[in-house]
Picture 1: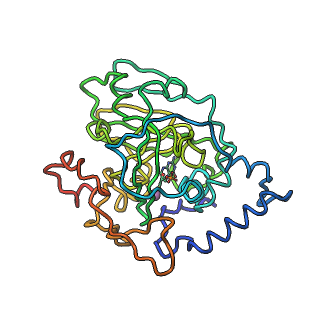
Picture 2: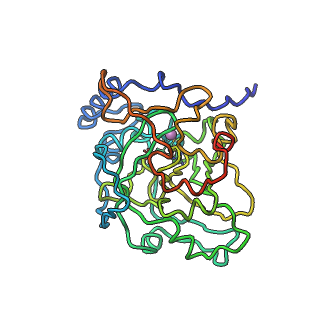
Length: 321
Ligand SMILES: Nc1nc2c(c(=O)[nH]1)N[C@H]1C(S)=C(S)[C@@H](COP(=O)(O)O)O[C@H]1N2
Ligand SMILES: [Mo]
């Protein structure tokens, strides 16, 4: 008999894989990856693929967008991920995203624009000069990283497709291919994963169309070949492996909001004063700093990007969470 689809719940912070357990599992996986064994049906060859270096990607560091932070290590940023299309555990995307085929790849851009188009990834790479930006990304679960992303402002792409006067919102749809993505056959979310922004948010120069990190093209587990990074919003707004960008007149549905509307709103700005219904959002763990006695960091309003505040003038951010 068909059972009710379980409402999706992000794990409580206390349920997140403790770092030390995670570390030892990763070490274990690295050891076996060099041996000729398989783990969970995964060959060592496939595993090697998931951690292999990508193509170098030249980008000029933009000092205006370079957080004064120690970057999270490449290893942490590529092995501790949320990408539910590949599974629920933080290590699943690293393990299972290796087989995602990211070339050829096209992004359909349509809706309320004068120039609908389908762009392949090489054309997308050429729309504007690539910049390196060190952004913090703060997950709604209470952990954060600081990552040197590569890309350009989403506004550059928006300008190219010429939105018409009806274009008030922008919707991102990400790949949902059950053949390549084992998580898509589970019912944790209604696939495809969709996200959205108001058009003025999307045009804010901080909003990054992202094609790389750490001097390389994106690893699959981080959303190859193209994603967005919206550093003032909770991490789930930063949709990975985008296949469609649609301009709309009305506010688009988002996968998380549909799944648990009282927990995940459309705006989802990082806000230490508005708690998640099941936990506080006042502090966070920086991945890589999580020794047993390490103090958590205080979470900052808009994740420490006050320049976006004017987008929300006059709005009650408790109501529009
Ligand atoms: N398509 C898709 N995009 C996604 C997710 C996802 O499950 N599917 N997870 C989100 C969440 S919850 C977070 S915190 C960030 C994590 O990005 P990172 O793994 O590159 O750090 O990706 C976001 N983008
Ligand atoms: Mo997240």
